[in-house]
Image 1 (cartoon, helix red, strand yellow):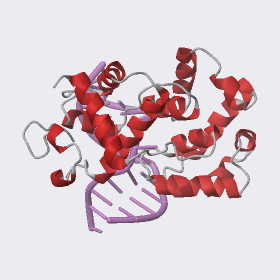
Image 2 (spheres, protein in one colour):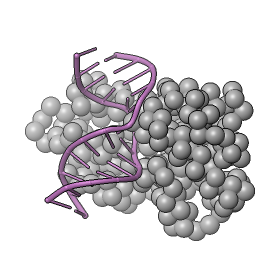
Image 3 (cartoon, helix red, strand yellow):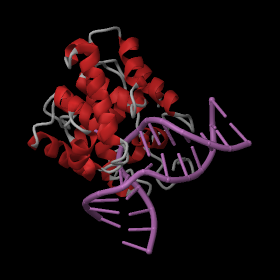
Length: 223
DNA sequence: ACCCAGGTGGCCC
DNA sequence: GGGCCACATGGG
């Protein structure tokens, strides 16, 4: 099977098996950004708790976070771990938002894509995955988000070899039509699938794309 | 008592 | 530029 067909069939089968995921689980674009900054190496459950704490304290707002003491922010987001870096990143990002666009996200995103992405990558704690997550789910840019799960699954289904993140991203973007809803859904489905079966010790008999995988066979290359 | 989580930044070579 | 490593909480 050609790789383009495989990429599309896997999407269809994941969608059929898991159903629409309705990602990103946040109420506003700003919440998406806060969640993305709190996410690294942390379970979504704890990120949700941290966001709920900020909301309850009336701090879930660019201006409020930009001026709140880091110690105060830390008190609320400690549950998300890495508390010596994440609160500072959160505040710094919000200060940047206020300084560059008065906290108006629509204005922030209203620039050429390359400029926005480069600006995101300059912010503390924002790497390629966080930047693309923000663009895809907080803005409306059809860019393919590649996280550790995506790399692992892409290798399992034979879409790529032992290539790096950049190659995985360009591969998906070449084979999957550049459609916002599709990119959002595909990434959400890959995470759902990873959490369900495609962990380092997968249950092959439960995998909905098992005949496209090499679970338990030598062709599998991954962490 | 381990190991892991939807990465990132700072090292070192 | 690639290959390590610390980071910190909460859950399996």
